Length: 428
Image (cartoon, rainbow, N blue to C red; front, side, top):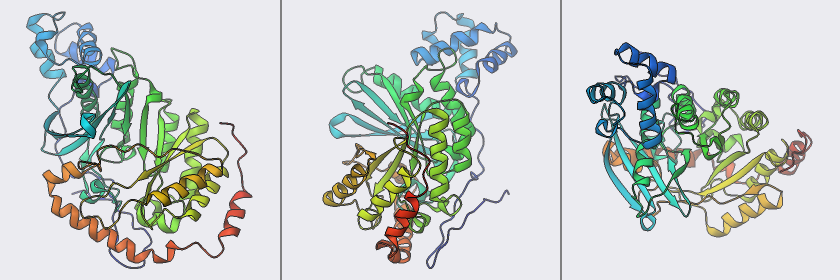
């Protein structure tokens, strides 16, 4: 059996979290139309003995009309419909249940995959649109102690078809009036279960299906799609060079390596400086401003001096290339941590704003349900197990980082050193 790669961050005591980049062995999901390029679909249809243009007709039903019902595909010969849909549109995900929050404008759905693995997506209605938060992996191997998905571990990567099917079903439900009136899903965020860049080939293919016009894909605006990462530096560069101007969101959560090593274990491999340099490269390569995600945890990473350090690190790489989204922590089951106070949040945001950093507290949805990603799936997998793992992981971090809570003695000289190295100003 293939061994799982592990990276061990620097620790002083307590158990070491292990990163996992290798999925557990599972059978592969059935090949789906959304896994294939247009030319591959046409070749497959030809192998079935049908004219290649039938692939384009089928693709238009799928991407333009969110349709998988052969009886509605009246432009296809009736004798061919069942065979074409059986081969090209196998069922990949099955709804287990929904949770409704925020007065009916947030719907979290638990999906079961063909092999019994489970993932979540969240559909959110806004006044003029809907946004879908999508999963790219069943579970996650990044082992972040504040994340329910990370504490559950990685089950497997999703195929491009399984990712895209979450979107197709959400589009269909939204347009059919699940919110009481028809609404278009215009935005997608890869902020559900999993580390998207750890499943880059499938995520890349799914992005092409979302962005390219029919019959290739849904024809969505790349600017309305956000891909989140905890900091897989080499893959950020690949995404930058892919030519898809999606928004990159970096889950930073700490501007100093001492704390981030424990909050984001992959920081043991790719440090804050290297990550921010690569995020800046993404901005230069794509012209898309980078989002810096920062979950505010009470008395953990919400200190004013950390806001000053974050501002200095961002400004040293130019002005206007990044936007910070502080996020009140949504605790996982068993969590010993909680969200920052309103007062500390206000000071943190004001400190960034005063330093010229564009900053917006991110809207949080689902506070009246299991809002944090992975919590609904934890019910199916083993909520008590996930809760125990989260509590142990957080206690271990708490024991290690007491020295990191206070402002460093040489902090002013650290800020001065950062300010002395700049990449030039970039106008917003």
